[in-house]
Length: 167
Image (cartoon, rainbow, N blue to C red; front, side, top):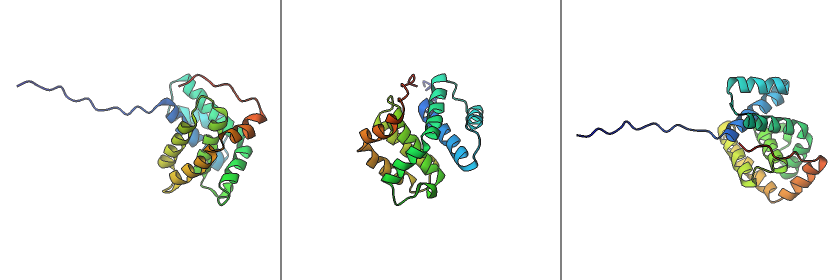
């Protein structure tokens, strides 16, 4: 009788950018709901759940800082494409997922459109309510048809930051 090697368990490897997006969402949620200082919040998130990758940490910081910098512009776009849901009345998680995805669509030239939408929907499934993923997908699906418009509205306000190293 030959012995079979013990099967190795599959180790779930969360891609670094997905993990960074999750941490960015947690940070934005805390900043939005509690008003804590962004740098302190990001430092605390990274201390609790380190990324151990400089490019991933820069990605996290870019998303959080970009969303905060362009929050009012992002909210205008959300309101234009989900007028029945006033942004201040949206769930904190939902509005921050939308802000993150729209920021990525406009400024992160290294994130393909479909990836930004898919990652936002996945965040909604993990952190949002029962209908959050459908809602996020619907709003971003509408915005996807106007990708050039989003870029013109947001990226034209400043020189878009160059893509950082990919993670």
